Image (cartoon, rainbow, N blue to C red):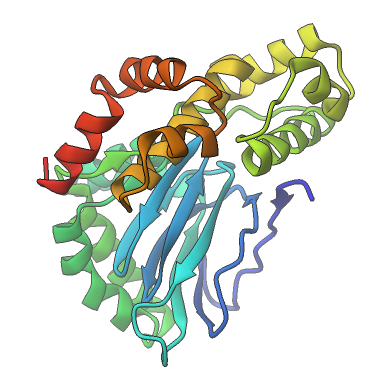
Length: 288
C-alpha cells in the first residue's frame, strides 16, 4: 500500500476540519499525506510516530504539527488506561492560511513563522502541550465561529513555544507531476516499512519504475538527500526510539534497525547525533 492522498471534506459553515478519533483496539500504521496542515494531540496512547524520515516515541499528551503533503502516521503500542480508548484530537487547516495570517494580522506573525517551520513537522514541548490541552479539548464542543477563534488561540500559544522541536529533514513542497508523486510515495512507503532490511538502489528503482539514476534525482528533489542518506536517518531515528524506551543491548538494537556491523552503527549514530548510542541513552535517562 502506498501512502495515500487523504482528501478532507470540510463541514458546512467551516473553513477547516476536525476529528475526535477514538479507537478501542489500536492506532494503526496508515502512511498518508494531504495538502493541509495537521495539528494532532494524542491522548491515552503510547507508541511511535512517523513523520517524513523521522521516527520517534510518543506518549499521552503528545502534540505535533505536520506540514502540507508531508507523509506521516502514528502507530500505537499500548494505552495508558486500558479501559479507555486511544484518542487523537486532529485539526486540519489549509496552507493558504499562512499568508494572510502573517501579512494582514501583524499580531499573528509569530504564528505564520511557526507554520513555515512546521512544513517539516514540529513536536511541541510537554509544557506547551499541557497548556494547550484544555483549549484543544474544549474546541471540539464549540460552534464554528468560536471554534475558529479557539484554534487561533491555540496556534498563538504554540507559536511562543521555544522548546518546539523540528522533526523531519526538509522535504520539497513544490507541486510535482502526479506520476512522480506516485513514484516517490511507493518508494517512501517501502523504505518506511522495510528500513531494517537490505534495500538496494536497484530494487527501489524498480518499485518507482525508474532507472537508479532517475530515482536518485527524484529522491533528491523530494527529500533533499540521497536514498542512502534518507535510509540512514530513518534507521538512526528508529534506534533512538529503541534506546530511549528500554534496556535492550545496543548491538541488538543495531541489528534490529538494519546494521550488520556494530562499528558502522556507532559511526553513523555519532555522525547524526554527535554522541555515541551509549551516551544518547544515558543523556535521555538523566533528562539531558
